[in-house]
Picture 1 (tube, rainbow, N blue to C red):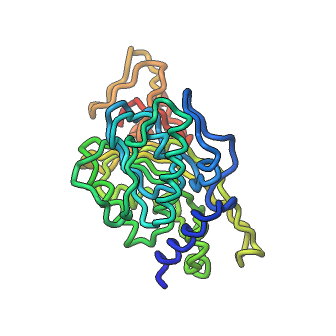
Picture 2 (tube, rainbow, N blue to C red; picture 1 turned 45 degrees about the vertical axis):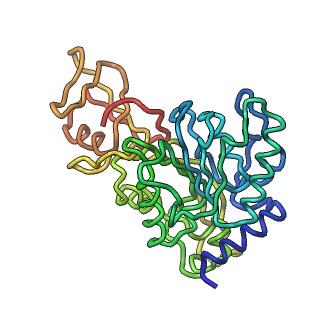
Picture 3 (cartoon, rainbow, N blue to C red; picture 1 turned 90 degrees about the vertical axis):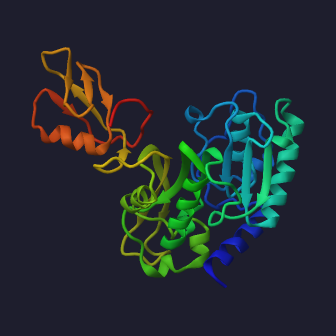
Length: 322
């Protein structure tokens, strides 16, 4: 049995009986104004964060959700797109697709705005998306891509980019690790399927995304996820895993490399009304501007005491310049 078959088996079991400790992090029930989420969807929320970014979604868009789970985030995407077949939810596990369809049917009973035709649940997987090139404005996956080994991850990212329109967004939520995990954990297929042992370091994770051709990457949130205890997992010390929510934008990569936003800002504090570095970055006096990491480094390298560059906050809300 390959590790992907083990993953399918784990989620087949999770479709039959909700797995309380599979992937999810503690927190209040998800809610949006006018949205009623069936209890079964909450019970089957196997994500580690959120890949539904309200700031990036609009009525009339089309979205593809990769790995439908219980249908929660497909429903949330439909809340924003509000059109027939506005959301295509792809999953290779028949039992999970059936569970999602049941949950979405139940959601229609509680939400007057929601029509089941808004979400199409279909067979398929992240490595071979059943969609045309440039078909979607938005793609999303939650706690799935971390399961893949490097070659499959590259293929999944390439597929997501293929089906996105220029300027489209890929929203993802995955666990990351502060240090590479040992082989005895990475080779444990059920731990990998449970989103515990396949995660990468932040640098490797971001690099995989930008290597797939996404010219801009934005870290939206970062939070504690799980602790792998030293004794239980055969480690030299406890390892705190984190989960990270990112949005990758399908734009060309600039000549000087991708723009990666990690919440850094630059502020001009000199005597003039603004500062222009001559490379397209204008900083108004006294007002922090979001900048990508490479621009932050370039501004800091100028060595000016009237330019203040902050450290990463790991929360990026948009705007600024890169």
